[in-house]
Image (cartoon, rainbow, N blue to C red; front, side, top):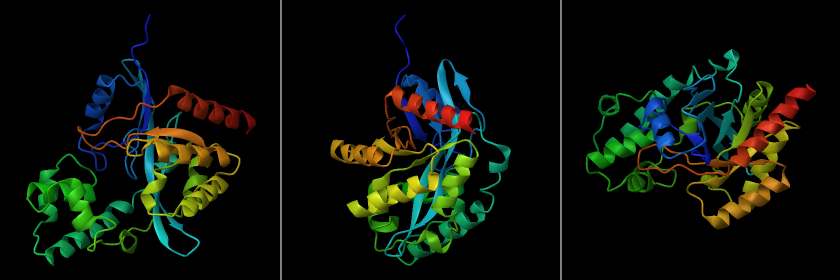
Amino acid sequence: MEKQLYGIDLHIHTTSSDGTRTVDETIQDALNAKLASIAITDHNQFALKEPVCFQGMEIIPGAEFSTAYYTEKGRLLEVHIVGLFFEGVPKDLWQIFKEIPVQRKHYVDAIIANLETLGIQISYGELTNTFPDSNQIGRRHIAELLVKKNHADTITDAFDRLIGNRSPYWVDSSKFMKYMPMDECVRKICKNHGIPILAHPYHYHLEDEEIVKLAKDFKKSAGNDPAGIEVYYSKYGEERREELLKIAKEFDLYPSAAGDRHAVKDRFEQGDELLLEAMKEACKARKSTK
């Protein structure tokens, strides 16, 4: 019989963080896209705690951890680590994000106050009313509201001109969000039988050599435990994917496939299922040696 499901996407968001589709809707979307395996990886939140199989599609629990990382020049970056847990999320990890919601509220309030100085009036109440299903109001929601109120043409425009990291009106999240160090996060994921994956390495506005150093430091934190890097990322072209594949080989990192999907219009990545199988085999081998 011809296989009906194919491909993987190991980085997907839902309304449990800043996505616009619920977990159930996202699972159905992925099934409609005929994916064989997906991972639900909301920001600093476990939307699922156990692996699930739905109509033949594998659903892996995980999260996208925000972490603090200092470059060699002393610049503090918010680096994201996807943690996948093939056997379920251990209970001692469930509460590690408990302080983040209050910090995020202060951060969003600061962005709103900054926009007010530009004559742009939005409120936290507007955001929660506009996105009632979201458990984590953040910048993407602000961007969507700015578009809705005609302060920006598109979400990309809202980020570029008003709230993004390269906007002149950028608000530094590190002043409000106190994330765990990257190396600590990686070790914690490994200790709890998960696999850490360095998310979208080109997103941190680093020079090429700094990206290599980030990958090196990431792998060093994982030690002998298996770790991965997002090579097949939906927003990266072939040239970047080839460079990331070289980095993956250099530091013995497992290449991952990531759509980083947030909304209906965002496409899923259709990664090779062999990528996931390699990660699983590495995790099984680790377990047998400990």
